[in-house]
Amino acid sequence: MSIVFLLVQLIDFYELLIIVYVIMSWFRPSSGLLLDLYRTLGTITEPWLGIFRRFVPLIGMIDFSPLVAIIALQLIQRLLASLAF
Image (tube, rainbow, N blue to C red):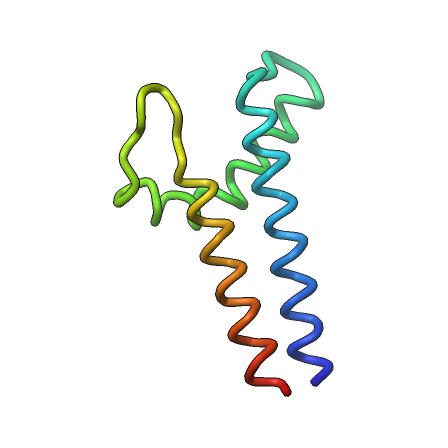
């Protein structure tokens, strides 16, 4: 059960990284530490988000793929939790 708990915690942390990345994308840092952080978060989160960007179209100027990606992570988390108990 401790491995499942660790995976659930990692998924929670990854969801937080996605949220921070999306919020930072609204402001697009131009230089310095924030730009480095934004690029690093992009490197970490874009592989997962890219999967959903292929299937979720833009609605107007709004990208809903991060929301769908987080929902998918929640479903994986629930599946892991149900398998553990």
